[in-house]
Length: 71
Ligand code: 9UX
Image (cartoon, rainbow, N blue to C red; front, side, top):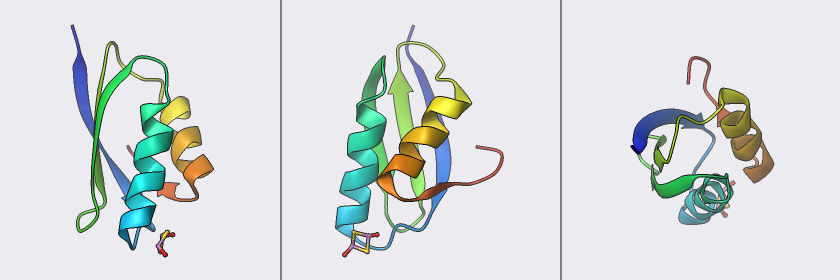
């Protein structure tokens, strides 16, 4: 069943940052829902199965931000 996990992202400072991260994470295979909180830098992702850490890291990097160490 779906898995929900929270990630910490550094560097987002405006709503457009949030939009960029949301779009990149949403494009990962199997992702069902993405919720990104600007104030806390937390991204909550629900996917059909656990996402490879490298995929999440690449998506955040592609958006122009940094996935914090350890998640
Ligand atoms: Mo907003 Mo975010 O102008 O890197 S897109 S600061």
